[in-house]
Length: 140
Length: 140
Image 1 (tube, helix red, strand yellow):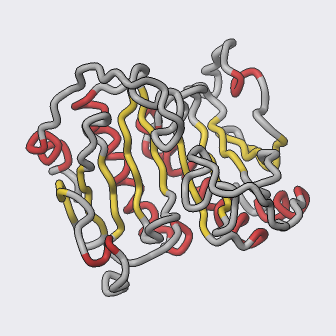
Image 2 (tube, one colour; image 1 turned 180 degrees about the horizontal axis):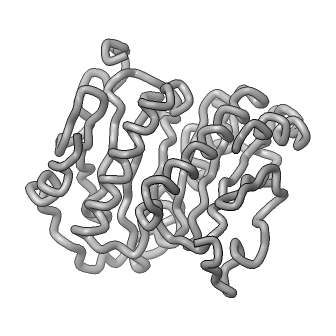
């Protein structure tokens, strides 16, 4: 399915962020968000809409990458919580958000798409893309 | 891990909704939300915080149920999009939201935790718990 492409889709025509890891099926990109250092997305390369549009093997492949990213983000950023989400309402091209959350972050305990809870910005771990890349390098 | 229980956790002390299907590991409950008929949650029975706190076999078991619920909700409610999310910021007990979305729903294209986009409520498919239960009955 790697040749399924939509010319009007920003995740078909561009990488969607700085690529940290990639395979023939999918890629991991880092999201540039000062409130959520380590926020990554895992993007299926082909233009597929829903998880259940993938077969079981591809679903497992994608989720293994999502959970590897979760493990790397926990190891490097030690957040209080991990949030995982796959929406695709605006860009219906399968992608997962892997978001480190802190109890004093901008939206906690709301999802990051919810109401802002506080405006102060406590110091956060510095993002080190090289460390993230190393933490994902074992993935096949 | 089925004996891991927190007495202060609402998903340890109660079912968390009307139970449609359950196993020794997890359960599927329906969420009562008139805006999102068919909205279900998949709740891991033990008090575990993150997906990467489960071993790989348990992660696969849970995700297979999540995707079976997605398939059942698509089949029964024909939404325009499925949203999947695991947050646990308020209740740090592993659970997945499986949410049918329509292009004219209350929050679309925002996540349902985002800003309300419209107040009118178009007619939605009627929830039939018996049909959901039948659609999940093949799960092991």
